[in-house]
Length: 365
Image (cartoon, rainbow, N blue to C red; front, side, top):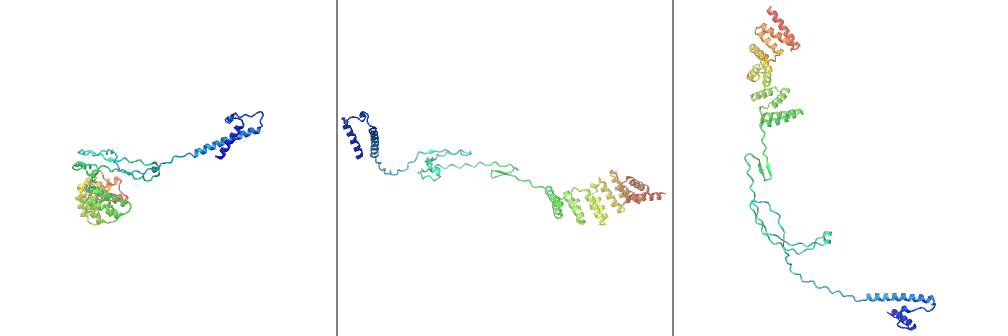
């Protein structure tokens, strides 16, 4: 303040010298040609005066009395939590049931205070808030289960109400035999004959009339020269139905080859009903009869085979032999000649027939 007072006093002194103590500063004029130095001093004094005034204004503004903040009021005593107005939350619709249950009472849910932004952003747990316990509501009545429809007889049985249990139809004996046959055929193709034999036997056990399994097993026995087992297999097969003529023919041949010609004839006779329309069957039957010396029966069976239109040279030759043994030389020579003319004889059989024809001519002369 001393510096400011000193400047003010200097200004008053300058005003007094001019003769007017109250004259404003702007009325001070330079008389005549005042030197430039006095004008400069006056400008410097004005600038100093302005700076000093600004400093005084700033000092007074900074020292003004600031209002004292009132001490914080003591926190009020915690008030008892007041239950907020219940907000009715509609329950989801219940599934349809036979009887309509009573509408449940609305649940009272206190509105949750929104979390501050800082808490939501940082993921920190929100401070615990006063929660109002929900008003106890009446328990919902249990829905009565809808009775499941009764399944009709023969239909699939429902399991658990969600799916249907399918009852598979049991396989028949023929289907089981066919499955075993396929396994046996696969094993045979791979060269596993023991496994193939076991599968074919299993198929026959399921269905004695399963022809493919018995036929394949017969091939295994014959190739391995297991003739006894082959005969047993054929006899069992001829007891079933159907009875292929070839099985009787194979069995009769096996019996004749082991010396039982009568057994072979009986086999052919017993199954003549299934081989009567088969030329090969009748020709084999005639050959067995011929070997046993029953030439008349042999001629009859040869003729039955030829009449089927499947005449072969060997059948004509066999008929000629039995006719010759019966003393019917002309009929025998005619049968031999027809066999020679058919051209179906091998070189050895052709030579044999030619000799028979020559001999019969000589006997006729």
